[in-house]
Image 1: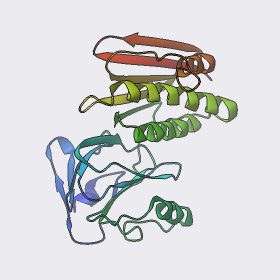
Image 2: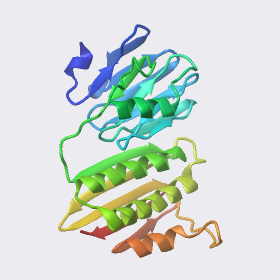
Image 3: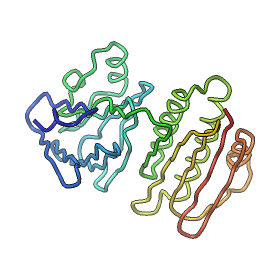
Length: 248
């Protein structure tokens, strides 16, 4: 079966009513009810539409999030240790049930009431991680979680882990804020470690627009400057790249 020939990927489909098929360039097609998805095992990139039942994502840290119901493509990288559950009807298990099952070690597609699940995407150990997401608010949480776990795998702990996560979170929030109203807008997070430093680059559609400083907004840039060894912002009318570096 196809699912048995995908190293590092566990495709769990306990019931009839879903379809799994090979596509070009090594990609896998998934169909569950009205939900249609394309998954690239080489990059762990998932693109889906779901008109009825929103998929549920279990992050690497064990947090369950309901992904958007959308008739337009939603794009997300399944980072190491995540699972994504697809449902055929609008009766998805509540995220708190997914978290409880995960904590008990009893989580699978059947226990979650899902028609299909992509489980625990494993990648070879690497000093680099490249993630891509749709420019939607929920992806800020998902990207922060992924970067926090990546930093922990590199031995970053305590106060520095907080600083890395906070700075990345501000850069990602800015990227989403400034491009999410553009149709099909995405942002990427490129994390690399070398020469004793951690480098993280966040790139998105559109120009950089620093907001006015107020009690609620405009504090992202000072936070990034305070928590990084170096901060660079390169922006044009088409793209913005925020580069953060942290000494180990």
